[in-house]
Length: 173
Image (cartoon, rainbow, N blue to C red; front, top):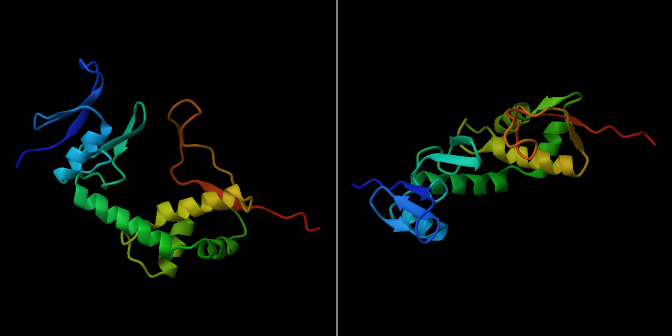
């Protein structure tokens, strides 16, 4: 079986494009994703198993769990969709309400996973809980009290590994 890993190329005669290890040259991202999909490769990382969210910072592709394969990408997409249905804002609010002081993302995610009796790895609980905690933060229900673990692109892109929040206190009026 021929390997199909696509990489960006620049300075090509007709502008930027993508090159595949099978020898194909593709003019743009859309065609590169189509080629990756046709050959059962992840359309996010184009089969490389690595993503670069900001210039100079790479990590395992989160869309395919670092495999570069399409099957795993689809499995993760379905798992994320299921997590959206199963893990609700009211559920996360209920867990957060049980904390008087600061709490970490991992603590809330573990409590939700335990409450649903899910084995580790069954659903992407952490990312779903993170999204809901950020929604609660936007509405002023909780406040983040963590500093970023890394500045990736100056102060424009930051990385939090296990952020910590605290419930907002009312004035008691």
